Figure 1: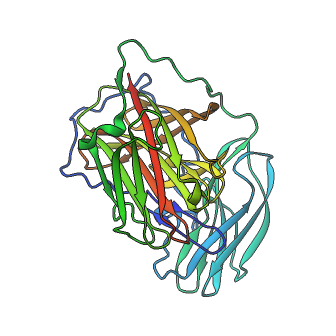
Figure 2: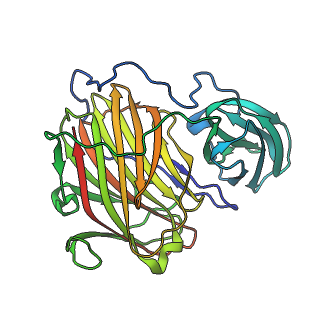
Figure 3: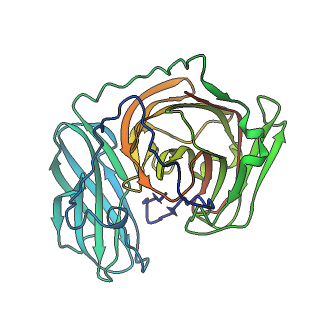
Length: 379
């Protein structure tokens, strides 16, 4: 996964690549309750120049653009007419600005200006909005992508489902050491660190008496990925993930983001229901696999207060090429997401996985995170 951190001149680039041996998957795609394709958000099969390409226009090979800060509009509910305010940070002159809405240019100017303030109109519905720039070296970069809702949002349930009696329940997953692995290179932050550990059976801090501790040190903008992989083909299409997470309060301000992923690989398709509390931007984000990009939602996510925090997420697989974020509950506060995204193809073997990733800020301050009572219910 790529995580674009475009804020006051700093950019941290996070690409999660699971290093799984083998390839293929089961021969027949499985389907959920609804085999029909569902509407997805902001996808364009024919994007405008300045809005397409790898990672929706990211090609910063020379590193000459250090970031784009999209100041407004905020993600979430917005009127139909907004003003896009953005600032770019570069070491060489800029040559072009583009404002993209669902992959189409709604504003474009050949300009060396380092900031723009441009009024645009957005039709009713859910849309993806971002700003991009090109520079005199031929590099391009973009801001974070924001989910914009104009008008009444689609109906979404804020209630978690009651699993059926025959649901498969995996409990205290933080204790199953054989399934866990750890790496920094596979998280592909701006910098790679070898200073990381994963420690099981921790009594403090803990709720169950046996939490798992994750530690990430290293230079600035380092990321470390902790992976819980269960190989094999799953027959399930509904997934309720429930766990508690604790940050070292002494360094909470140095967590740029805390990534919390659930995923399924099935028949050569990756259903990556990744999510993260993006403290650096102040919002919750979900993962668009087809677009290979994080999308900031209107759900606020400031730095966490000291203590344990309870995260619950319900996702489902409606058909063989889509996955849906249904409901998110953070410390008892529910949010109806109702977001459907399209999968990407993969050569990974069939599997179900959980992932936690620690993303450092520019200071490189070592991070500690604990998880406990990790439960996955599938039906």
